[in-house]
Picture (cartoon, one colour):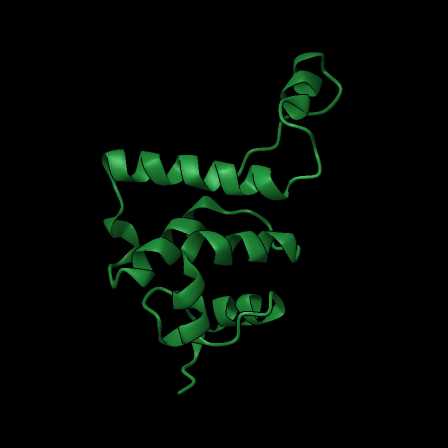
Length: 111
């Protein structure tokens, strides 16, 4: 059985298209690999990191509304999100902060 990604709570046609570009074409595949690996594949495929999109995915796979994520759970998800971003970054850890500190580039802020 093959079900559209957009059948997962919080995920619509735009998310479905992003996942397809990353090689994740069914809800079954997305559930099987889990939120962290799916999001890692999105970023590796060129998608821009977005914390709300990440935790909406996590909540959706749990059958929960995207805005159900709060407090310590949200803080823990932020740590996971940051680790996923770092795992696909071609910039060594700490370089962006150091460049910002010396005024070479402005620090990027994730939405």
